[in-house]
Every structure is written in structure tokens, then in C-alpha cells.
Length: 290
Image 1 (cartoon, helix red, strand yellow):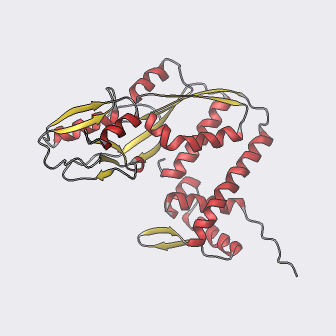
Image 2 (cartoon, rainbow, N blue to C red; image 1 turned 90 degrees about the vertical axis):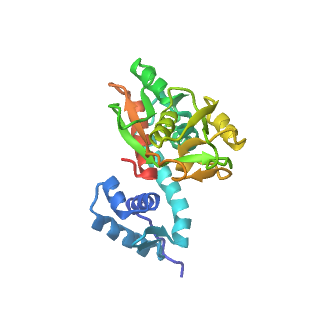
Image 3 (cartoon, rainbow, N blue to C red; image 1 turned 180 degrees about the vertical axis):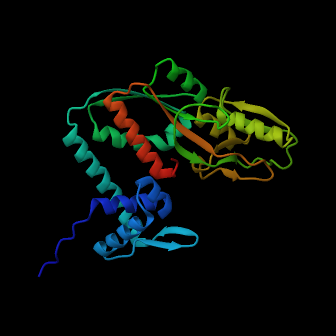
């Protein structure tokens, strides 16, 4: 006798993916706007449907089981396909142009998959993406160059925008002996650069002498200089290449978290509104940033 088909509940799958990305029932409940007891019940129902334990909970947090790791890969595909189908049916003829500004390093690391999924869902919407330094992006956005702009935001500056990402900043070295360097060489982007400002201000507070040894406007150029031991730089922890060394704390001063905010024009077209929603949802589930 053939085994009966098991029809997965999309809502349960979405809850599982949120918990898996955030590694927290509490944060997932906040993002999904549900009670924690509700999502706990949803996970139990999903595990009953699948017939396997997908998550392990402990005082240290939430971890995926081996079965959960395998399930997550397919869960994301299911959710992407579900969202694409709904969008195609509800808004099959949506078209237009959306202009997005973003810092190069953040765009390189975090946006390709996000924008690719949006493009698949709305194939008739043209995306125009511009990468630049944050202060330049802010100026261009104020002049009307963008519908949406992702920026690195300093908490000390009153810049409007919805926070969509937060991540620790760390010092990055290619093996340079930072302990013995009397004056710390830095490989950074040109002014105005938020990370450059963070680095120099932190060193000034710690009374650690420094000098700008290498300046480059591209992330690739900065990383090449660090690998050549021309200087150290500052990056979000998740963006550090595996062949470089993270110096988190001593002998260098601690750095504050980086914060990415989304700025928007006063009047968004429907395609721009949909991209905004897609970015907020995708980045929030990846970082717990909202």
C-alpha cells in the first residue's frame, strides 16, 4: 500500500526558516509578530509532519539538527517559489525601474541573492544599483537620485531610515604584527567613510598612534593591501575572508557594531515599495536587525 502524501504547511515552514536564520525563538516571534508559545507549537506541528526533530534548544541557544540542516535548504526554495507564485498571480504585469544605492562592501556580500530573488519574482522590473560611500549615497539620495538607499548609519548622526542590519565590526589583518607596530598602518577607503572614521576615532580614544598607509575606494583593493600586510582595516565580522585574521579586541580597541539603514523617497512607486518590503524581510531574517 503506498504511503500517504504529506502536505507541508507553508506557514510552519516560514516559521522554521525564521528560527533557523535567527537562531532564536524570541527574535523569530518578534519578526513574525506572534507569541513565542505559538511558534513553539508550530515547530512541534512541523516536526510531527516531517517525522524528524529539526531543532535543538538549549540554554546556549537554538541549533539545527542534521535533519534540520537538510530541511532548511529545501524550506528556502519552497518559500521563494511560494512568494514568486503569489507575486506573479497578484501583480503579473508590474513593471518599471527601481534605483537603489548601496555601499560596495555590503552590496557585494549581502545583496546579490536578495536582488536575484526579487528579479526572479518581478522579471519586468528593471533594477539600477549604484555602489558608493555612504556619505555620497546620502547626498545623492537627497538630490533624488535613488528610490531606495542602504547606508551605514552612525548612531551619533540623526539620519532617517529603517534599520535593517546590525553586525559587529572587527579589525582585520593579513598577519601584520600589530603589537610591535609603534604606529599602526591602516588600509581604508577615502573620506568620507564610516569605517575609516570608526577606526581612527577608536584608536584616538585608546591613544594608539596610527597612519593611513593605503587608501582605496574598492573593497577588493583594500583587501589586497591587507593581504600584502600594508595595513589593517575594519570590516563587519561576517565579511572577513577566511584567509585573513580577525582581531576582535586587544591589542586593538573595541569597535561598535555597524548598522545599515534603508532610506526611501517620499513617494515610492509600486515596484520600489515591493523592493523595499523584499529587502526588509530578507535582511531582517538574516540578521535580526529590525
